[in-house]
Length: 155
Image 1 (cartoon, one colour):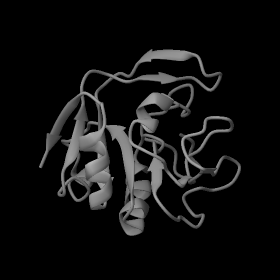
Image 2: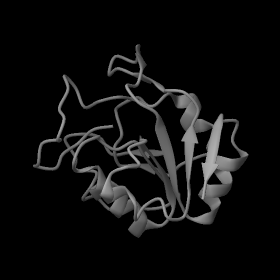
Image 3: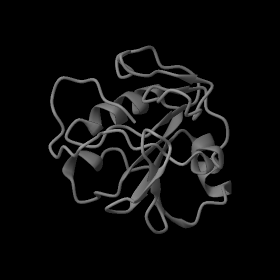
């Protein structure tokens, strides 16, 4: 996950690059595009990596995003909602007002906490909170429900 937009995240850590374990992504099937890509981390057939601006690039096919966390996360989700075909992985901050529009069609709460990877591909330990998958399009709901991921579907 990388970020290009000009507004800084509301909570900025030492890095905003937390790579999703490929086993999680691959359990959901093949993706055509990851606009939040990272070099040599093959989450999709095509990766858009910094310095290219993935948020403003042309999105196509089935999209995977693990967007940068912070106050601009909703921009990435809105773009995926417009695209209509993909899955987003974000922190389970269900109390936030901006997320409500995106989870109306359902979401998947991943059991436990994901162990993300650092930019050097070394495991960073578990995330500070739980994560959810938000599908856009019926095919992506099915991909989540048919995956071997442990968790619970909420409608």
